[in-house]
Length: 96
Image (tube, rainbow, N blue to C red; front, top):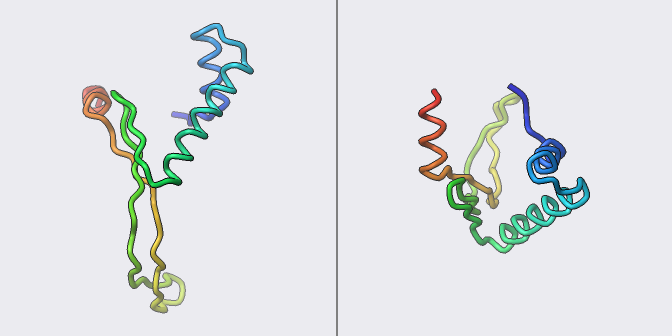
C-alpha cells in the first residue's frame, strides 16, 4: 500500500477528466485553500459521502517527558479531527 499525494491526486484528475494538469492543479489548490481558510475560522468542512473535518479545542493537561520522566504542562491548543461519513465507513468495512 502506498500513499496518495497531492501530485497523485492531480494525475488522477487529469486521467479521469481530460482537464489539463494546470487546471487540475489549480482546482486542488483552490479546494485546499478553501478547506484551510474555513478550519482557521474554526468552521467545520463537510463533504457528503466522504466525511467531516472539525476543529476541536484541547485544554491544558499534565503530561510527562518520556525520556526524563519530568512532569510538564501541555498547553491548550486547537486540533483538527476527521470523521468518516457513514457511506465511506460502510465501504471500508465491507472490504475488510
